[in-house]
Length: 216
Image (cartoon, rainbow, N blue to C red; front, side, top):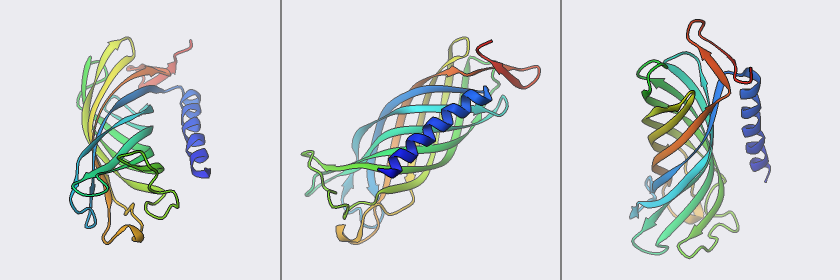
């Protein structure tokens, strides 16, 4: 429970920081997660589909470069040829991403590439029937960590309101299975396709490279 409270406080602090700096945008996003286990202990793991949803904030350092944080509910896990036929691991993921835009802010269509680390907190582990398979916390670890790499674009819908699209690859770098589960490491892998909308918390002034309050 403490880790969830910490994550909630972190998300609130990010939003409050955005309001204080007045040079950020925020938004909501959702999409699909196509996941499977990787690593030596994955065996005959196959892809399963799930969902992703949450909020994000972005800080624009200049017209081409920015950083952002996200708080996402993400469904990972894997399908199998034997029993269990499906493992569903649900996480609160917090990626911190550096983004490079391929053209200037004045363009209506802005392709982008991004990369950065994430941490994930396990919210639940269930099988294909919805049964809890980690009730004693003896199969899967409470936390995950890795990298997100991806590309996409922003498209201007109206003044300072943007449609955000991205496709990303999630590469888990830690073993999420405890020894009782079996031999070999198991790492999370997933492909995410996401769509969101962002709104301003400040107004960018190209002549000065600074932002002014959107409330003025």
